[in-house]
Amino acid sequence: MKILMVLTSHDQLGNTGKKTGFWLEEFAAPYYIFKDAGAEVTLASPKGGRPPLDPKSDEPDFQTEATKRFHQDPDAQQVLATTAKLADMKESDFDAVFYPGGHGPLWDLAEDKKSISLIENFFAADKPIGAVCHAPGIFRHTLRKDGKPLVSGKSVTGFTNGEEAAVELVDVVPFLVEDMLKQKGGNYSKKEDWAPYVVVDGKLVTGQNPASSEETAQTLMGLIPV
Figure (cartoon, rainbow, N blue to C red):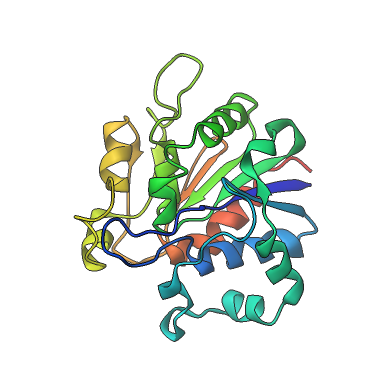
């Protein structure tokens, strides 16, 4: 079982002068779900090497069992520090793909032609695609073979407008995940802000927020043929 995890290479939070990147829990929880199930996990990012970590996600208030395990796992830290280049990744080499969130993907992965092509190829091959929190932003420009948006008519979720307002970044991000998914024809649904929530439609799995990371990954695993 081979799973590709795609992380952001973008570290600037708009024009705020603050740093962003990927959200630690959204990487760590799925990573260990996959590894503990015996999967071979490959990490990739647009620039390769160490992807930027959103510093806020490493603050004490946001530590979980998975993030604590990561901090005590030098092997995982080394794997994260040496991600492959996204341009070298092919859908045919993997059984599923998973995108952790954090605000970074809104700037790079949502617009990255290689990422867009990769997602479209996974979708066309009917292989599982997972995205959590801000990562559903990667579907902004993805299309099906019929030319319609990939999420059109699909049940999806992602970081809510209310959650973005709560972190006071509505006017900073390039687009709001909830609004974009609706504009692209997705059947968007959500639970209350910060509650775990995962939506499955065929082989497409989306999670609302960091608290949904583990369940999103477990659900994705269940869609991979044994």
